[in-house]
Image 1 (cartoon, rainbow, N blue to C red):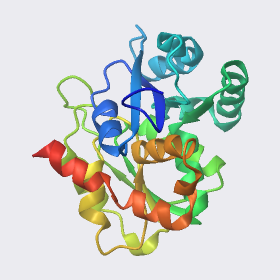
Image 2 (image 1 turned 45 degrees about the vertical axis):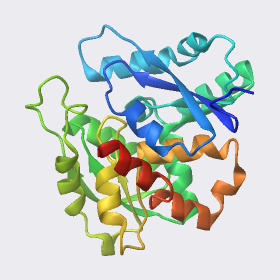
Image 3 (image 1 turned 180 degrees about the horizontal axis):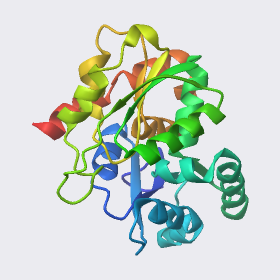
Image 4 (image 1 turned 180 degrees about the vertical axis):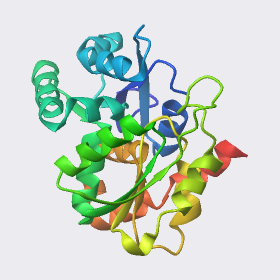
Length: 254
């Protein structure tokens, strides 16, 4: 047993300059769970080329955890899944799980599973991406059998160090406010680099439409590896609406 992870220890793979995954994952983890982080690295000059590298090095990056008793690995990089497609993604997941003997959870598959369990088919997207990656994401979600009813962009090309990781939560919240919740079954805030927890909490109250992000879905699905009860409809609704982590978010932002 690991002292600070008596319920479960999760390994998280994070893109090299991402400033959001670790803080949001920490907020989304209930007591008794902990995570170790490993950085996906690439020297490629473009976002797409780096995403390809991250996908190609998923398994080798896991070796950074050595023999730590992790029970699941979370791949916190949705963009790589968009570019590879669901068939290559699933093949890679199965290969890693067979080789490592542990659950391997991608953010893309976590979102798709959450939407299926919610019975959501018609969705709205909040995208922090440039146009080409937004289009790749739309194709990816459609390949999961989803209908894209609305897309709200939060991309800002004038960011200081990275067009996604530098986005403020206020910009993400403004884009989310542009989605008509009456016209969709669910809303997905894309990417693991855009800050999403504050906007989700601000718009969840009074709405029966699930609002999830790639990060909240990834954390939820990683926790399900250890606690299957979290996959029950009521538990899912409470978790994605902020049950437990609402208070942790407030403390983190105080």
